[in-house]
Length: 92
Image (cartoon, rainbow, N blue to C red; front, side, top):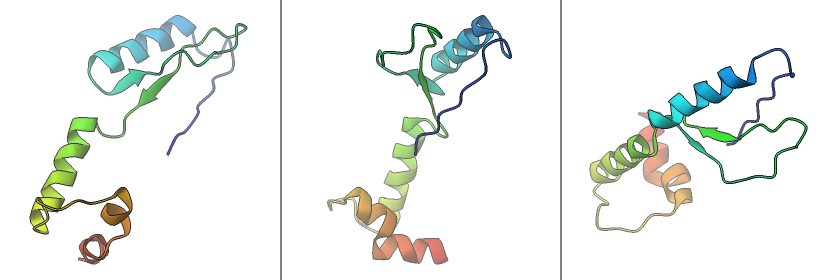
């Protein structure tokens, strides 16, 4: 899921936002998106802000697969979200 948040110019200092995002990137809670041809009028950089760090998601998924005994198996994203084991896990 991707959510775009726009701030009206003048409502929040651009330097503050840039510093906030820079600190989030340094701490691993966000990453800069490749040049996405932002509007020259706004000259705002874009960043992806993580709900959980990629390393945390990897650990969560691995523990789930380990718990269901599927470490040696191949799963698709669909299997992990909608598969029989996922549905059982969600109802538990």
